[in-house]
Image (cartoon, rainbow, N blue to C red):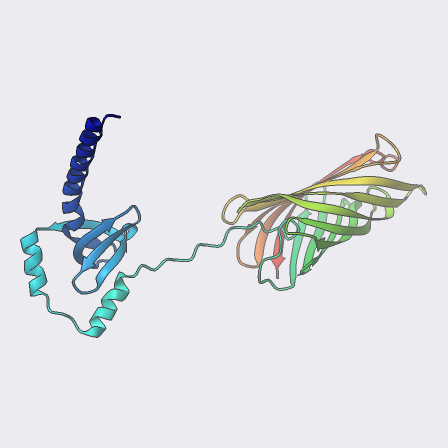
Length: 344
């Protein structure tokens, strides 16, 4: 580039910088009164102004920073008026300075803790919990009309956690009659022990048993190991997946026995829909490894609304499907239950 053009560009840059300083200088040096949202006022000369705060030089406190979020409005003070006001100010006592400085400080509230779903199986135990947590739900349906019907059910879930272990106990009992005929007599219990490998992975052992008179199962038991992983965790949603092996044996009312060696594929969800309303679901699929085409499917879901710290209203849905049920028994068993829950 020729020397003449370099010199002219240098003069242009110097003139532009001078005008920028000339325009910006009065703004930075102007005297203002900042009216804060808490009712206080701060008078001073602006030193710097950014997106989040304004720096002032005050006659009493020196240089201070006022958060922009705390400023309700500002008032520009003419230079003469500012001089008069500053000259008329009587320096306050030391205690008054301390109080005013304390008022100027902005108290930042700690953030609210993130919401987590209520299902103890779907979420890690809180940072400072008690070891045991119990959730017991009761349901009683009675009808006296053309056909009298009575039904009673209890669902209990207990969790004991002490890192890296966690134990989950489930018990479901249901009994009912219609016109003196047994329509429900079921007991199912399970125990699951988890060992945390990392913040997102764990291994587990699962064992369970029970009976179901309506489905003509005198007694059954099952057990199996597995591996779990946390696929997604948000402030109001958790998704886990499990893969494992399952052995089950049934002794049926028709004097037959059913033995199955199956894989276990499970999806576990927990969702905080609103501030109080929560939902959790567990889907388990058991494809028979010895007999291709045979399988079992279990869906369990709960919609919970707490009416107090310990009392909740619940809607439980359980659906069980077996491709090879006992003779003369429907392969699908759908149960919809309304219960009152107690947490302690």
